[in-house]
Image (cartoon, rainbow, N blue to C red):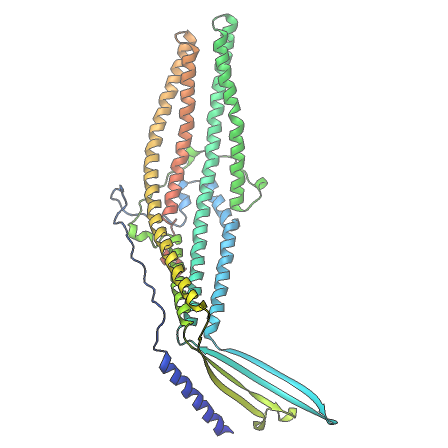
Length: 467
């Protein structure tokens, strides 16, 4: 019995070795190669300066403790981020599932059966262990595992993208709230000034030195300013509610009680070389990981055309007496190797291969687009930060000029050298200039956040790989 078992094992091993030598030299899948990309040498219009990529805690550059607190809450409670984290766990589980095909499956079974025939009862005891293993000659299972790994990696890059987008949204929403607060302050200040002028005109009308038309014109200005306040308060509340969703809290639990745009600092960013951007954008890394997964799936589809080899082994004991179940006489085993080759599949294998190749081509274009879009995002954000900074300086000068003109007009109206219409014109110009300044300040801060976002927000593929 023992000699026969050894002989069978040697024959089985010889069969497996022969199959491996015959088939393992074949390669059915394309090796991944990063596509050629048109990468600019420098950023357009960027002056020569030392590169300074964003840090991982880039939002601290605005020097706002309130913003720091909001970002911290969002990292802990944002719903989209929680979904992205769950998807990473899903992808990791799929990777373990795919990797299982590279390992043998082993099962154990045992039992006892009792039967009666011709008035005589018999009992049969058995205990068996079975194993099966599919030899991955064509790399199908390995390619499936690689595809799953790249998909899991893509899910991690997706999580980083969601995190960066979420933090940028918290910052810009917070800035919008402050901008609305500043607009309210401007409107209420202009309303107080307009009401003061109205009282003076009403007093002059009572004294006979001002006409009813001048009073009515100023009353219109006051009414218009009063009417512009409720929409601003409505928008402020709506943005606070939006901020509550971003940090994962009910709207009633969130309020912004203080702060103004002028309190915020303006961090300076000097981006590095464009070629470095591809390793600092999680969305670009995600697109390439998806492309790698699609490339591996082409191997899977091609390998389906070739024969598969299945090895099976069973061994155990079977006896009519429990006391002799584990004895040599009760030993039984079987070893087998089988080869299966698809002959006719109705075109499904060809269709799957064509689908995998077409899907790779689709993701290839998505990857190239994501790279070009990344360069565009940086260029747009760079020009926005430069131009909004200059615009804020010029708009501040316009506000200062408009304020001086209004103050002069007020003094001249008191002595009667101008009419109320001239005063109204300077008053409107001041209100418009101050409102525009608030909008420009918000736009400048948004542009800085957009630049942080476009540069990857301090993330890097090297750092992610080592984390």
